[in-house]
Length: 214
Image 1 (cartoon, rainbow, N blue to C red):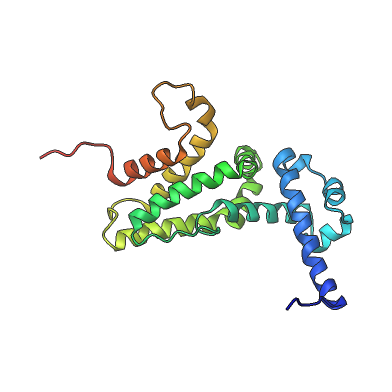
Image 2 (cartoon, helix red, strand yellow; image 1 turned 30 degrees about the horizontal axis):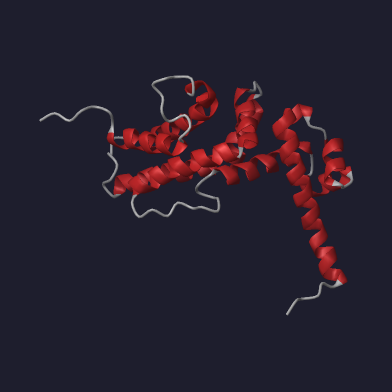
């Protein structure tokens, strides 16, 4: 049976819908124009709300920007999205993380461009906000995954978990940035096969590249 919405139900859902509309438009505007290029007036117009609604939901332009970064971070992270890491072993979890993380980056290129713009910016305060307010939880979760692998005897105990996490994330970022260049290298066969890249990356990180000697 279909539930009929009362006037009170409609009023209750309107603020949430307004917030989501603002956030959706702001994500596109910030990704395209950056923090300084995007304007609250244009965001309000395209979201079909008044500017006061933005301040009501987010407090300020900086608050809206932080909400956009957090939302994008949720979309990019394999640990927070609709395809959570579910492999039974740490090795398989890291392989799955590498694959899903890169897929998410390629599917949300506007989000990645926004984060890259922030990483290259000279504003140290904004970098601190980005690190502590947006990225730290997901990074810490990945580090914890490695630590659990060490405790289970799957990962070498002398490996720095944060270093392994940085190498995995950094390799994905570099692939994202240089993929169009890789396509012109005759020795690169994985430019059009991100899944092959992720698999090879995780194998090298987990097994190393030195041949075993008797």
